[in-house]
Length: 213
Image (cartoon, rainbow, N blue to C red; front, side):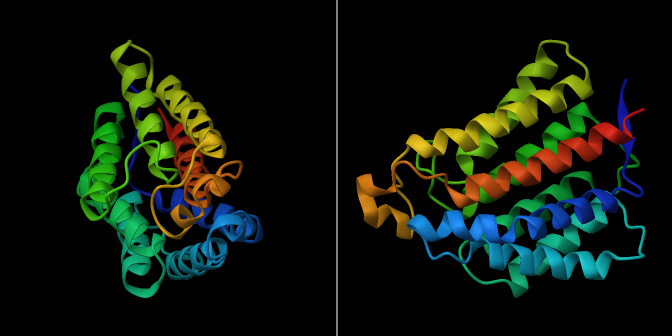
């Protein structure tokens, strides 16, 4: 059965940070069309701070996720700091103390993070938020494993579903947050949170797949 080690997995979080920082301007540009325009700036700040603290530590995935969650919840403002902070804190708790991570544990980690987001927000799929990426990605992963596909194949399914979920937000009308005030004028633009969520899940899945044995 395929699995990957928790040890050394902090490199996956560092790769996430690099991805977010690289796309800082893009994420803020998207957000600026229907929101505050600070999504990329805040995300890059938080992920960058976490990456600096992880540098040279050879942290486990659980340790790195916990640190990232702590930074986002405690030191980053805006609406996304607490949401992503909760996600990564729950991810970390889901795999803490585990030597290796198989598909079942990875699914439990994802579900725990998703439940954490839902516990502090009222958004649902279709509201033009990060849940439009997160929920279908997790469901696709679980559907793939239920169909008997390998861990690697399930990770590919997750990545594809996250991309589709992100793209689905173009045609949605925002129902949550500042963008909801725009009504129909919020249609035709990607949601910044859904976009950053797709980047995060894609990098997470890519890093996990590369470490499978």
